[in-house]
Length: 423
Image 1 (tube, rainbow, N blue to C red):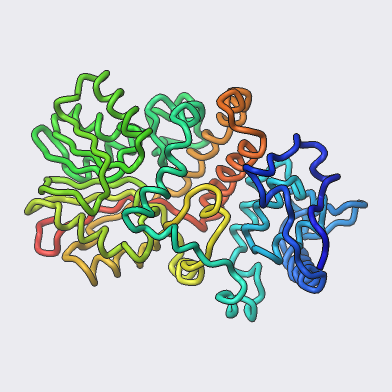
Image 2 (image 1 turned 30 degrees about the horizontal axis):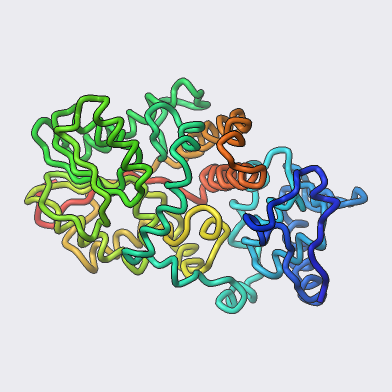
C-alpha cells in the first residue's frame, strides 16, 4: 500500500485545504502500487494518443501536441484515478496535482475522445471498477429535496455574482458568436420567449412551471397575461423568486410553491420545465413524463429544455457515480433524445412534436458565467467560499463548457403534445 497524503509540493501554491470540508481532496486515497502502476500505464497510453501537450515533472512530455496540461504529481494523480476514476481526476485538480492554463481546452480534448480513453476490455468491466451512485441520491421525494438543496440552496448571493440580472441558470440563445456579457440578459429572454412561444402562452393561458429557478420564466409568462403556478424544491430560490415577482407587480398572477412535481394538481394549457429533467433520475422519468401528461388540459402543450448526451454513452454511464454527482449535482442523469422519446412512448400518450438543439449557445453561456465568476473571486471569498470551493466551481463550469464545445453534450428545446392532439 502506498502512503497518503501526497502531492504536498504540488499544493504549495494553494492555501491549506480545509480537511473537514474537503476530506477527499486533502487525503489522496491509499491505493496499492500495483494498481497505481496499472493505472499509470493506461493513462499514459491514452495521453500519448491525444492532441494534448502533457508536461511531467522534470520536463518529459506526452501527447501529440495541443493544449497544455501540467502534471505536477503523477503518483498522486494516477493513484486517485486508480481509486475513483473520473472522480479522482477531478479531485486531483482540486488538490493542485494537475493544472492547465486553459482548462476548457484540455477538457474539450478529453470530452471529444471520452469513448476511447478507457481500453475496450476495461469498458466491458465498467460495472466492477466504476463507483456506483449512493442510494441516498435517488430521486425519491426525500432524495430529490436533499439533492436540490445541496446545489441551489448554497447562497442566492453566490449565484447573483456570476449570473446576469435575469438570474437565469440555463442555456441562453444568442444572435451570434462570440457572445459578450452585455448580450447575456437579452439572450436569456430570447430563449425564454421561444419556450413560451412553443407552448403558445398568451393572454389568459394557465401555466405550470416545474422548476422555478429564480422566477424569470414565470415573470415573462405573467407579462404575457398568463397565470402561473411554479414549483421548486429550493427554499432559497422560492424566497428570491417571490421577492422578484412582487417587485415586478405580478404577485396576483404567479404562485410559487415549495412542492415536488409528483404532488402537482390541476390542469394547465401549458407545462414548462427548463433543465430540470436532468435532476429527476432515470428511475423516475416515467413518473415525470406521466405528470406532464396528467397536468395538461386537452390540446395543451408541454415544453422542455433539456441537456442531452449521446444514447450509447448514457447507457454505458447511467449507473456510474461521477465527480459532478459528488460535488455539484447529486443524483440525476442527463437523458438522450432517444431516451426521452422511448420513455414518453412507453409510458404516456405524449409524443415529441418538435425539437431544436443549440449546444454551442450553452458553451458560450458557460464561458460568460465562468469568466464572471473568475473576475469576482474576491467577492465569492467574502461570502465565505474558500479557495478549494472556487477551484471546484471553476472546474465545474469549465468541465460543462467543454462538454458542449466538444459536441459530447447538447441542449434541446422539446415540444411534447398528446398523441391525438393537433400539432
